[in-house]
Amino acid sequence: MTGDRPERHPAPSEHPAPSDRVDLRAWGLLLGSFALLMLGYFTLPLRALGDHRPVLSWLLFGAVLTVLTLLLLSRIVDSIRGTGRRPGVWLAFLICLSLTVFAATYYVLADHPGEFAGLETRLDALYFTVVTMATIGYGDITPAGQGPRLVVILQIAYNFVFLAAAAGALNRTVRNGMETRAHRHDRG
Image (tube, rainbow, N blue to C red; front, side, top):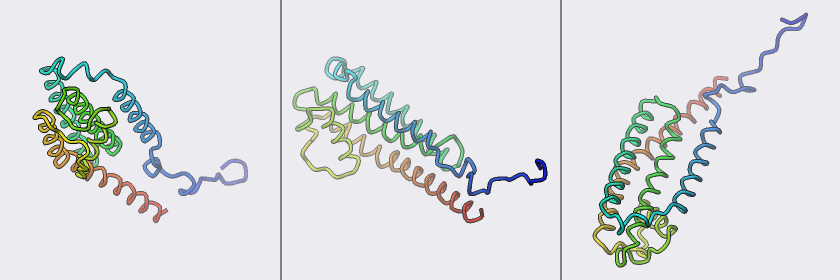
C-alpha cells in the first residue's frame, strides 16, 4: 500500500502472461531470415557449381540435405515433446530452407543443356520446387536428364517423409499454443 490508497495490480487481461503473447520478435526474425534466404538464393553465384564441379556439387547437396534432415528431425521431436525454444518458428524456417535447397539444386542442374525443359531462371527453379512440393505438376517445366529426375524423386520422398512431418508438428505447435491461450483467457 502506498499512502491510504491500495496498490493497483493490473488485471490478467491487461497484461497477458509471456506465454500468452504471440512472440512477434521470433516471427519477425523468421521473416527477416526468410528475406535473407531469398536474397542469398537470388544473388549467390550458384552456377559456379554444377558442370564445373559435379562431384563437389553432389557432395554439397548430399551434405546440406543430411544436415537439414537432422535439424528437421530434431525440431520435430522438440515440437512433439513440447521442449526446445520456438519449435514452430524453427520448423517454418527449415521448411523454407528445404525448398530453397531444392530450388538451388534445380537451378544448378538446369545449367547443363537438356537437363530441364522450361527451367531457365532462378524463379523458374523456385516455382518448379513449390509445384513439385504441392504435387500439382503443371507440366510446364519437366526434368529430362537423369540427375534432375533423381533430385525430383528425392524431393518427393523428402516432402512425404520430412516436410509432411514438419508441417504436422508445426500445425500441432500452433494449435496447442492457441488452445493454451484460449484456455488461459477463459480462466482469466
